[in-house]
Every structure is written in C-alpha cells, then in structure tokens.
Image (spheres, rainbow, N blue to C red):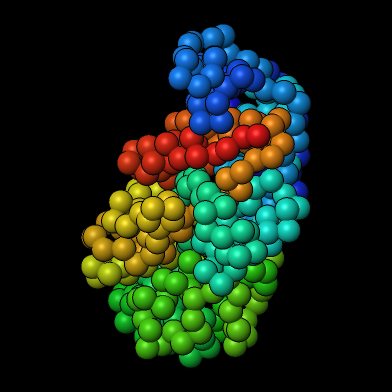
Length: 375
C-alpha cells in the first residue's frame, strides 16, 4: 500500500530497492513492441508475433531528478515498482524542474521530472524536439497556503495574489483583501509572501497563471525563476511549506500534497468564471479537461475555463530520450513508465493527493510508449 501523504518524508533524494517481476517484452522483441507478453520472432516479411510467458526485467539502475511537485507520487510509484522488480533500482533526487532538465541535458540522469516544458531555445541541448518524449503522469492544484491565526476561511482573487507577490499589498487587512472576503475579519498582520529559491516548475505554472489572469498587476513574467521583489524563500515545495508554517502572516504557493502533509490552511481562488474554488483534485481534473493537449503531450491547464476548474492547476511530466542505447536501462525505463500509466493511475495517484490523467490523455501517453527505441 502507498505510504500516507501525511507521513511521507519529502524527497530530496530517493533510492528505492527491489522485489519481484513485471511483464516486459522478451529479449527478441522489436523496440516497438509492448512491454507485456508479446514477442516478435523471425525477420523480414516472415516476422510473426506470438504470445509468450512474461520475462523478468534484467538488472538495471535508473536515476532521475527534478520536480519536487511530483516527488511524493514518484516516491510511492518507485517503491511499488521496485518491490515488484527485484533486479531494478531507481533513485530520484529533487532539486526542482530546472535541475532535472539540466541533468537530463547533461545525461547525468535517465529521466527528468518537470512541471514545465523545455523552452524552444534550450531544445538543441537535448538534440532537438524529436530526441525527447514527454510522459504526463498526474496533475494537482498549486495551493495558496497561508499562516494567519484566527482566519479559517480565505478567498483570493488573481489581482490580490499578483499584488501580494509583487509587494503592492503588504498587510492582511488591505481593502482589496477585505473586498475578496466580505464578512471575514482580517488582521493588520504583515504579509510575508514566500516563493521558491530554486528553478521550479511550480513557480513556472504559478507565474503563468498570473500572466494570464492579471497581466496588469503581474509584470514579472512566466518562468521557472522570477526576480522577486522580496519576501521569504524555500527550496522545493516542502521548503516553502516549512517557511509558511514557521512565519505568522506568511502565504506561499505550494503543491496540494505538500500543503496537506504540512497541515497548512489554503485559500480558495477566484477562477476565470468568477467562482471562488478551493484546491481539490476534482477542481484540478476539471482544469485539465479544459486544456488543449499538444502533439508532444504537453498542455497548460492554468486559468482554465469552467465554473468548477481550479485556476492554478499544474501538469507534470517525466521526460526521457527517445533513443535508449542501454538495453537493460531502456527496457526497465519503458516498464517503469508503463507502471506509472497503469497502477500509478488506478492505485497511487489519488491516495497521494494527485489527480490521475484523463482517459483520453492516458491513452495518448500509453500509445507513446511505442515510440521509445530500445537498442
């Protein structure tokens, strides 16, 4: 069973160890065959496909790094996958989406966790857009978590959020916040906005939302790193959660899983339909349903339309190289991704406070497994 999110240590570095076999393609399989029970025999025009007994995965070590947003989900997926595959060892270190993508470009890791697509200017570092594959895994709300004793219910508009994080609103009893919260008594406590200190996909999605929702008040752009005017900092989502929890008057943008595990309060956010929506998995799913999925399986669910859509919803992906030159690693990586797209969706995602993929997006991701070329 997955470890409860309320008791799970947050990943800075993770190493999960082994147990017994998963279904994979037999060694003679074509690189385009499934990683389950079919094997290809013969060659040329005489090639035939037959059902065979499942083969055990060979010994392999996979290393990944990157997004702390997806880390809690990754931890339980890795634990369950390696328990079922005794020869495979998987490590995943956090560090933020920026670090994961940098590590992948340098071929220091076998996969990167990221909540932000690779920028067009950086694609040559990976050999071009055709050299990589994005595998969407889950989605979740980015909460506006706050530490304000005596205030159990809070609503924030896009304009208020933008003004808080640009230093234009500095106290909780500001008239703009009072207008967002009729009937709520807000104290004169100083606001401490807390942001990420590392290159972060969570920052990218948070700033992307503000760029769309209030371009007038938000002028800092959309990026994994922002030139913040001040406030507190934290490394990783867990670091921001710790900073908010320790600072009266603080507010920070934190993934849903870490916010819940830290016992923080979080605000409802007014969406593009004018509805105040609390961060929930259903709200995240509604946002994802309204997003356009590109051919490479990237998509942007921020500020989505719809009365029930939570507006600061983040996607997340595992990025790999399409060509896998190490047979054992490539086979294990393909099986691991298949596990994420099957058991990860049905048995792990919601228990770890993540929204599973929609059926349409999930089918596209499963079909993309056939594009992985294993030497």
